[in-house]
Length: 464
Image (cartoon, rainbow, N blue to C red; front, side, top):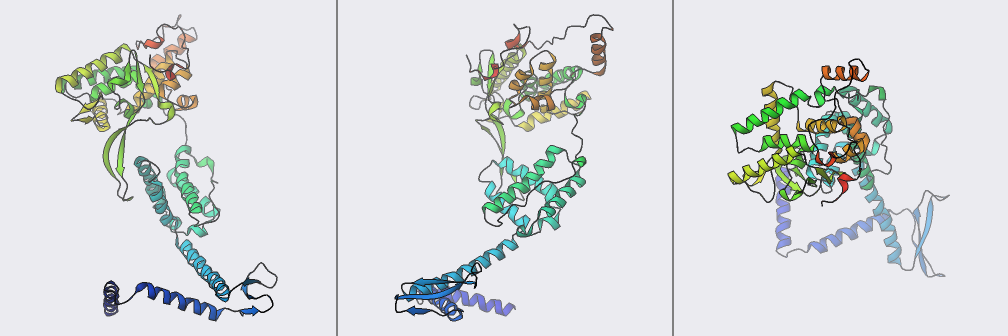
């Protein structure tokens, strides 16, 4: 076998040498091969080719299952044309057979990777990374399913697969449908690429198997009032220990703005006009997706858009927020930190999310509370607004959400501890006399002169 391979390689090298030195014309060779192929087709053609003297045209038959006698008559003016029609017919059958063989060999796994190569040209690298993470978690281990031919995939196969994933991973409804989306998009691509004619995708599972989607306890999702006080003091302590590090101030500022982590790190001084700040960009992580099995981070960059169109918004600045911003600018000036017009900078670029995450993790551990993320601050901000009488519609706008249901379902929690909660319930029921005032000390400027929140379009107005 090894000797044969050597001979074949030598022959290929010889042909290459002959062609490159003009000894043989490869175009001529190709034409001769095509002529030989056509001669074989005409020789094996099951019907005769004849000439009608009366009409002066050429006739033959070609197979056609739609006709009563399984054939159809074709005619051409010239003999060459009728022979070409015969050859083209059989060559197209071979092409269809080759395509069918190719489709039958296209497994779900191969199809997915081909789809992802296509998808990576349309979406950002972060989306590709998330989709690959879901593939590796839910699909990659299901060898029996992903090795199936896409051409032979049935609805029952999909039902069995989805039910097995749901049973194994105990997914919540949202996570389950995100997982299903990978297969849905892959099969839609298969139809567009003409690997399959009909998409067998559907979702038919036992919905009782969904993990509970009930809200997690408030104590895990927001900072209770005592926890917030402890964390604020801890951030001040950490800043005192490292006066040039503005990451603790990003944590403090987010309690006043409730932005997404990427949004707060992309704030620039030009975004601040009077008593309001314009949130309209974010810091995003980018990845090298050239190797889908080894996606690597290439760093962070600021983009001129937020997570959604509703994320472009104006927020009122509290007195505390303005003081924190002044402190950030003073630190940047003192230590010579500068990158364009951005607030949170270090070493000539924007402060990374990792730097803020580290402050949150170490700070929570130091004060002895469960580690909570910047996103929990965002939920605390939303809950604080609603708790202090801000209309839900305005809270939704402050967060940059498209609808109130998202805000209410995922961002509103009780920010008081058990004792405070019980006392408030008892007071409301008249058990302890007059209830205490429910106003916080946040002093949100835009609402300070209103007894009740109003002006639902506040967050949509341009800067004054």
